[in-house]
Image (cartoon, rainbow, N blue to C red; front, side, top):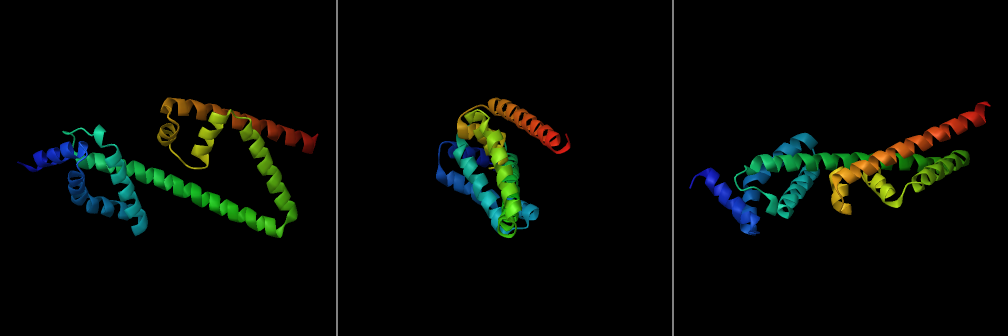
Length: 191
């Protein structure tokens, strides 16, 4: 049995739920995947987390694997998508923490600025509350939690097309409401 045939056998067994076959695939590829991710991230913890998440996704989606398709390119494609989602979530979390810290400092140092922040937050909440509940949920899952369109679709049990449609409508609505608010503020200040 050649190398390709043995991998096809491992994938065939892995698809059936054989954890030993999965362990062999893991042992064969995890070091190479870790090295690739470590070069991208320069963080041992982040690289290990993405390797684990990638192999978890592979295990959970094992029924969808094609036996004759090479395992390595699929592994790296899933790892790439996992890396992109992880990076997006990390950026969103960092931005949130930075802004939260900024506003927390404002609340301690300036009552006027804190009141302005509170009023701005109320305006944003009012605009978001104008969205239908499901559309608002989809919008917040993307903008606040940093989920991808596919992750939102899976989480809510809807199609990616529905997610795209709802995000498009939500974005148009939010932009329209902010334009109305800008015109109102302009009128108040200059007329």
